[in-house]
Length: 78
Image (cartoon, rainbow, N blue to C red):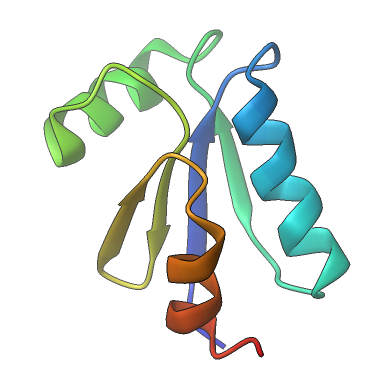
């Protein structure tokens, strides 16, 4: 299984949808709350150039927003 990381905020609907999707498909993930963690917020900005969340990494592949079809493809979920 590929390493999955999500940069999110507690109030982001799409962040919750992405995490619910991962849980429903038994995908382990690391969640960083960029609203509370300034270091991780800067890391997200440096890696993605994005201010919006979620920013998701599946291995080295970046997905901005909750793009379920693309996540299914990257994670080989039918």
